[in-house]
Image (cartoon, rainbow, N blue to C red; front, side, top):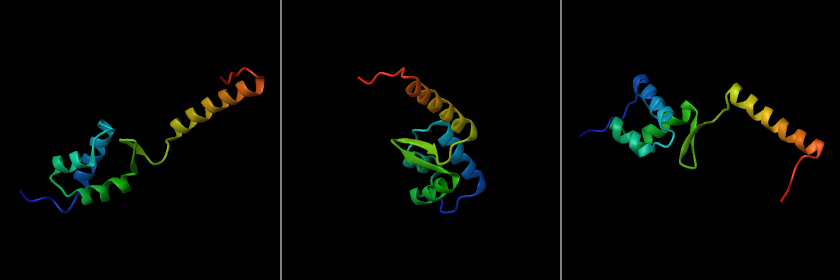
Length: 89
């Protein structure tokens, strides 16, 4: 079996679908499914905007919706501290 050394747009989309479908997929599993070199898959994953954090692939940049949710939650927490409704135990 000869491994693939060139990755085209179709395989790039396939890698992105694999990661979005299973955030815990290993890079080695992707290489086995595509029959490609692990190094090549790594070169594709980085420009897609993913990185591995605690065994899970996460986007490098937050979407506007995720960022807005984080701001809303943190403002609520900050409001609790300003009113004095907090407990540190």
